[in-house]
Image (cartoon, rainbow, N blue to C red; front, side, top):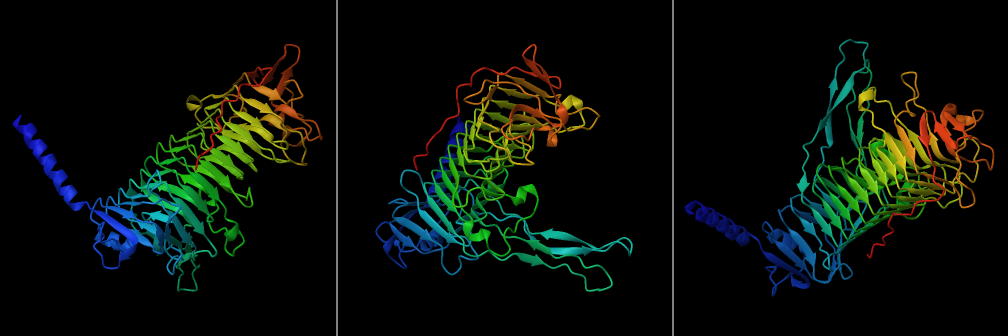
Length: 531
């Protein structure tokens, strides 16, 4: 009993100490410049309140246009408005906006805005709207001499230490980014003075140009309207733990920078080449109930709605509209009940393998829509999807990459999907117009693609045609018939399809599929975000 009372006394003392440091500060446009930021004597600048803030302080901002750039470096700051985003603006398009964000967060457990009408409209120009944390950037480099004189010198990068923030919340805001010039890249010189030796190429680091860029853990973005004119809208590629992006309207438009000199300025690998609505990392992240739309010149090359590197992420109930590649996965994740509209090239792309692609609606309504509704590389489940309208492309493009270990190979289950209204047009040289296309990948002398696939209860056809399984032509490019008006429901590279018409069962190199005679019920949910 004595120990229990002692613990309670310690906890109570800690609460008293913490509450003593926490303060509620007030900001009003009619406030005084050197006020104490109280309810009766409010400050007239948000920065003035930040300068007076102590850990876990709450800053209440009245209506008005605050032309400021904020740096939040006190733990636990809660920044919210009284009148909401329609009447309360933080405008960071001032003299330093070309080099810094409107809000720079450098501490943990910071919240910006609040749902139910307590957020802000936050503007930036040629920089992030909100940036949190600092990454390990290249700040210098060392020249490594060769072991022998005929070997070329090399360079070793020197990185700055990373600074991560945890627990950032961005809620109920309008975030608007304007870009009319590209931030300058930094060249880290490592050239040799000795002209007799080969010159080491200078290292160049490109700046980030996202509306929201967070380096840290456990980020929450909910009920925001975000318009990004930069390379990415939300960049969470350097988060290491679960992040939540839910109930946001996210619009991506980089028309203003796509024609500028030096664009694109990212690296050529897949991770850095994409220009995305969301780039996501962090184990167990959630992307749910968002509207993600590519506006302006829809389908710009390499634009993606969601690029996810997150382990075991859930991407569910989103509407993704008019991107070049709608959802791209580099690790095993679950993509379910999303509505994907008008992808220029790809609907869902599983490059990492092991994903579950469930109950999505993927619809390409534009004429000569190419590529595929789903590209699968060792996906675990492809089930309950409705894929239609890729009239010069493929509903499902599937390949099983060789793991060099037969014991670890998992079956891909393809069941209860609808593949319809595909292959109505022909483009010369395109491997398209198939419901499902199997690509042969060979390593041990046996096609790898055919062994791990199970197909059942899928619907193939169109609104005017009964489902049939047809064998691809071996005389055409890639084993796919190219004759105008001649479409196939199942195709395979190098003639891997054999058809047994007598029994009504078609065998794809040892894998049996029995199509249904009618489509499944569409289970993907079309949810309209109320914002």
